[in-house]
Image (cartoon, rainbow, N blue to C red; front, side, top):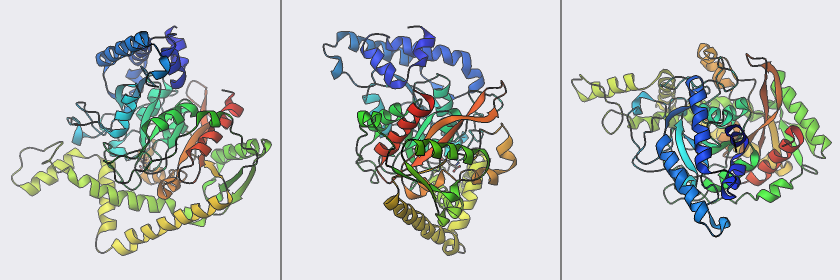
Length: 489
Ligand code: GLN
């Protein structure tokens, strides 16, 4: 197979082709790195990659295939090149979290999710760019410079897992892991025309993921199709003694996904998330599509969601300010020099080591946790979060799934977000509710937008499907149904 042909394969198709000796892992890894050579200087999806090591591992995989008497006994993702976000630990490799604070930090162990990925035979070829510590929605808050949108270098790919999305969309990896606290897997997937799954909170171990907002952090796949997302979810999920919040979640049955139909399903559209303009048009098109296929779709009222953005930013910033207290210049990471005492060391280290957005979150977090504001901000937000959870529980007694936009529009131009940070927070309206409730949500490509990239090509449009806890089977089944009906794949 030639490079172009290899790069057109999905992750699952490539895994099959390698096992069936139609292509070697080495060819796939080389195809990806040749593509990286061609595109990376503009896209900047990666913060580090391991070319020689990946080729060596690919050769070992190919040897396993050659010597195997029973290909069904081989690890399922053997020889497939994948990427991981740079806030996931991989032993012996740098993990920067997109921050100057950790620019020279090497992870001493491997994250559980990444270890599972490697055990499944996948080859982690590199680590992807991200907004500093996951705070942001464009990758522009990376200390190492922004990633650009794969279709338009004047736009961002979204964030904070923008590098993970851009790498997959560009053929610089066959799939990737991102992390989603308030939308960072779903939003860049939506901007880049990919599937992005935020799994049920706790279903994927957070051990080895650098904490941003521990009660909402999740690890999720960014892939070209829903089957790949299900396979990756099945690969990385599971209870882990190293993460006390982790639980064992049911495996997604791929053949049940293939035969899934929305016929007879009840789907709700929370009217607070519908918005205006193009994204609401996309949801209306999706409503028609689901109805034409036998689903019952109706708007529902969830008034508490009007407060979702405020609740999310209060709670996530409070948790972030506590989680980031560990970067003090003493234990690990960047340390400022020329200081005369310990307090100056803390101050200078944190002033120099953190970027603007991270400082904003620390200030907000400390404010809402301060004794003067704890009750009226943090406590209130906790209560309101419970109301969000209850509103979803109640909705799911009537509906199998909820449908809404993933994002209010298309990928912004570089520099746009910086002009109005509050507008960027508000743009998270549709992704943060699932984060607060701990429920799974998937962003699914749904045709194209009327807005075009600089070369005139239409940018991708997307919808989001949310389900109750552990409903990955249902929402990925529906995602597969949409893929077949909309893009015919
Ligand atoms: N844009 C959101 C934020 O900045 C989401 C980030 C995330 O999910 N990591 O907090």
